[in-house]
Length: 373
Ligand SMILES: [Zn+2]
Image 1: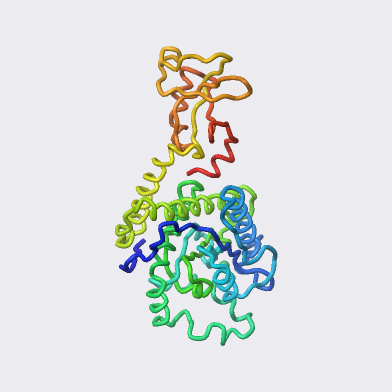
Image 2: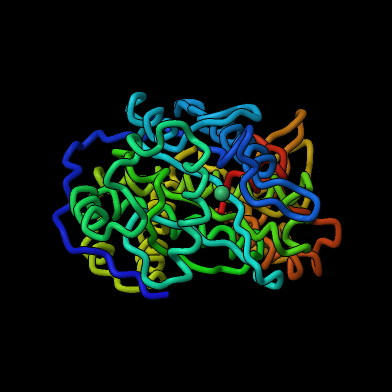
């Protein structure tokens, strides 16, 4: 997926830049159902995903204020959605949608930033999302000079918003990466097209197409509680990574030139992963970081941690729970990484199991998995 970013000088100079407010926009609503599938309407799926995504952010990153453009089945005009974000000085705008195609076998997710379309297919997606304005009142004056075909206006927008565009593309790539690696969705990439809902936002903003309602299987998946949980926790984790990345680079001074010059989505992603790994390495020393280990034994009295006492296993540590000392093997930042070690530990300790720790205390494994990558 070719993705050319314009070259520009990064303008975020504040050393203490923090993401404080995010606007979550559930696409469509009220008299505008969005795309309609065999069993579901886009407006209902987007609302469920938006509320769950916002819910995760509120629960796990309580210092971030979440604003919803709608929390119920009501109609909100496209320009009002951007206005809500602008008026609240939001740091980020995330619009959640579900795609549709005449080709019922089309499936997968894509994430979009505002810009010129690269081909007709991209323009069609934007047209589909933009067409709601025909049922808005006064749309001729509200969207004056902004037609999907007005290339000049789009170029001007892209130039004035170029600093935001880099951030938008970063978030979009992180969302796609989460969908692909953690939820197993088909990755249709990061693209740009002229979406009216993104037009007037003055902060980094993306539009997510979380699957095709016109594809029976994907529609079914997006209708299930589990599917919605998986998709929205993926968006949440992408947001968390984005926040960590944006805030860290003002502290660690992470080199952004590579991102600015990245020509392909996977190059952008590679650089982001390197940066995030650097941040995560640092966070190993932070006691609030969630880590995963394999619990192998417990005792009332402290056993010396040398390998001889643990069937030769190295890297043993412990935590305390209910007056007992619990011994654990390994320490990783992701569930996937610790899982790779489980089989070999089980040959020595058949009852061994994976646990998650935060701040020296055991926490619920499912809760931990929602939060970590
Ligand atoms: Zn939509």
